[in-house]
Length: 355
Ligand SMILES: [Zn+2]
Image (tube, rainbow, N blue to C red):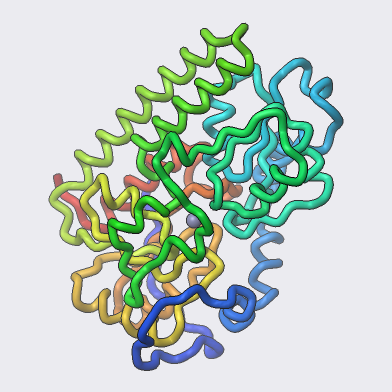
């Protein structure tokens, strides 16, 4: 699929004008910023765009959360997860032996997940929760309040310690993501090698909980491992000879991808629902002008408003790059692997790579 490249749109008059740089990039009050830049109408608009495909997918994944105990899963292991990449791992490796409950509804971004009382109860009925501790505080709290039979925290397998994402994983005032912050960056799935380590951990856990199907889990893991190796090779071989190696994205999700492809990552905000201050915006504009940036990447589950402001200011086009935090009916692929392939095509075009 060819990436969509759009000319910058006219900035909303309510968007703050560029002001002199601020001295630091501290966590901001999310709600205040959202009120200023997004407004409630944007959020309900996103919901209204969801079509039957996304809703059906969500209904299938959420089925277990709405039903009773493990008997409702026909003997399958009930696995509960907070974000799509973990659901992909559990479903791909578990196959027909697991029933996966994804707690984030389709079209929602998972950072800010809030759970209903019924969902928390569902967590307590699960055989296994697969999480990345600190990435989604609501999931951590649910596991504490209603412990599932087992919990697999992928922090150990991936070497990532998120703690509290907002406070521990920081970006510089100009949006730069330093390599030192990688150990706190939750988005491991955007490096297929780290995704492979997580897959190994999920397979080990399923084998331990359900030894009768160990052969199936191993076979599924081996097949996924091979696909992940091919994927990583494709990224490394095709993202060479690029005119721009500066990667400017909507939120700080691409540190791990940048690390293995050799790009230098900058983000407009730390998480999808935070926005840069006017001073930080000015610094990002300065980075875009001085680094030969060829594309500013927006993402499907967050407002493109800030990226559009910068694109208008600098004349650099935008394109949609998917951090694969959730699926929607407008996703460029049907699963993790196809979304990663679509992202690769977007980057080859956007960074102007000619291997
Ligand atoms: Zn994210």
